[in-house]
Length: 189
Length: 216
Image (cartoon, rainbow over all chains, first blue to last red; front, top):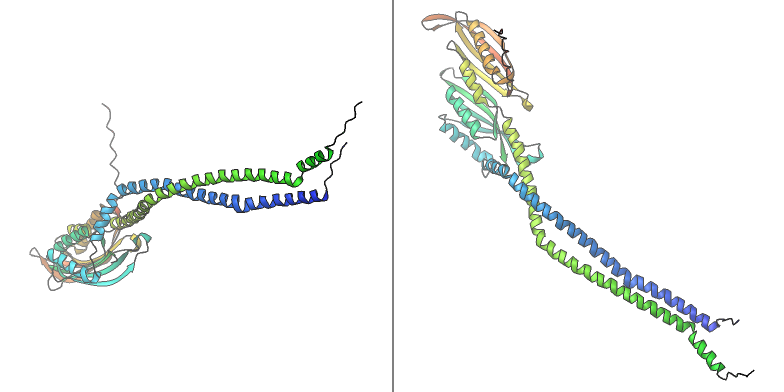
């Protein structure tokens, strides 16, 4: 039987071919296929992310549209509440407003003083401030006062009278001296 | 038996050795593998090009939609804030105590022989109720009875609208002063009433039980 033996030269060539093979494999995977696959992977991840966002966007926009319909009442009410707070510092416009209001109710000489202001604790009212006012009505008839207080409570929904003091005037028992402490919610401008 | 002479023996051997040359075989093998790798790489590159094209399409779609989505998200947040604020403000409005109905009830309770000189009312903190102090004068043959009548009437009237109504005398004392009402001299009493109540709606009174009628 014939035995084939590799010569030294042939062994060197086989070794060289083996090294060449491993170098080829390394170069192929490290510099060609690897970056290509990694680029494909990142593109697919980006695409999946964007497709997810696109699918979510339809839902998001539908939700916003539905919310818009549901919030129409709240939006209208909020606009009305906002309209109650005029531009500028409340101390500049609230006392004249009270004076005009009580003058319309036939109660003159109204004095309104600011007692203090504080932010609300509720997170939803972060853009609103609570103002406490002392409204003095030095001469008011009881029935006129009752009508005026009712009108005030109905026309100023964000105003709450927290304290009321009525004293009969000793010289003129038909009239009373009235003091109202009221708190109002006013939008920060 | 014929004798065969192979005169090309060396040439054939050389040819066989050339054919079995490991370098040549190795190069052929490597070339084959290389061709396979190139083909596989090209297939992958083709797929990557497809992914890139789809990604570009998706990016274009997203670029069109993104401003709308951002605007929708912003609007949603704004609307949620408006809804929350309106809810809290509505709660505050609903929890207010209205003084005008109370003053009206009070005015209905004061008879001609009584006069109220001082009213001090306050809404207690955390909506724990309302406290009112009422001072006044009552006149009559029995001025204390006139004051008591006022207290009873006040209790009854306030009980129709409010919960946990309490109307108690803090002071009730006779005065030496005599007043003339309707041509007659009347004694006077000074009183001070402490009124407390919860402004929540009064509990509805149960309807009176019907008396059973005997069957005929």
